[in-house]
Image (cartoon, one colour):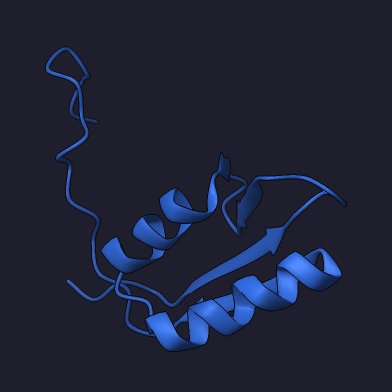
Length: 85
């Protein structure tokens, strides 16, 4: 199964310590920088380009990332009682 390209807008409040990830499907997550890197790595992002985007967001509060061939994230963090939907 081929996934559609993944478009994510990354924002950061001025003087904030977290990045907010906004996906096209309306899903939003607020992550610390290391968690953000892990989130993108799990989905197959080019980590060199991601670092440039994170630097841009850190300095200018907004950046966009497109992963042309995203990978399906693993469910390793899923709790045992989480339903499989």
